[in-house]
Length: 146
Image (tube, rainbow, N blue to C red; front, side):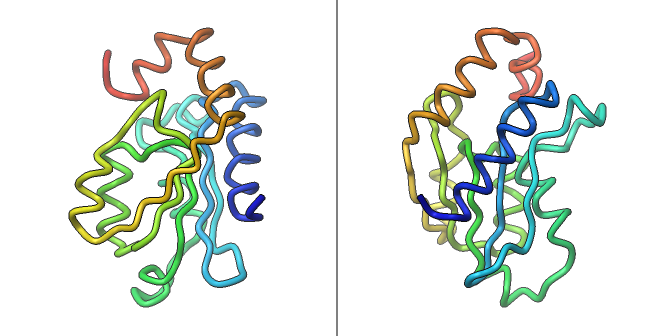
C-alpha cells in the first residue's frame, strides 16, 4: 500500500472515531508529507472543513511549483469546493480512494489537466457506506443535499 494513501485513509478513520465524517486526505511532494487532514465539519462546527481543505490548510504555504508537482490523496472523490481548491493551487495529480458513495466533478478536473487515479478501495468504500447508513442526514448535509 502506498504510504501516502495509508495516511489519507488513517485520517478518515480518525475522523470516524471522533464522530465526524470519515474522509481523509494527504498532500505529498516527492517522498514527504506536506499536509494531512480530515473532514472536521462536525468536530469544529465548520461549513468548509472538508478533508482536502483541512489537508491544504495544514500544509501551509508552498510555492506554485511545489503544488504543481505534489500529489493529493483523498479517500473520496472531491466535491466542487475541494475541486476548486485543487485547480486554484494547480495540483496536477489526485489519487481517489473511492467514488461510489459520491462522485464530484472529476470530469472538470480532467478537462483542466488534472490526472485522476481511482483506487476503488473496498475498505474505504465500506467505511463511508457504514457512516452514511448510520448518519444519512449528516451525510446529505455534507454533500449539499439538505
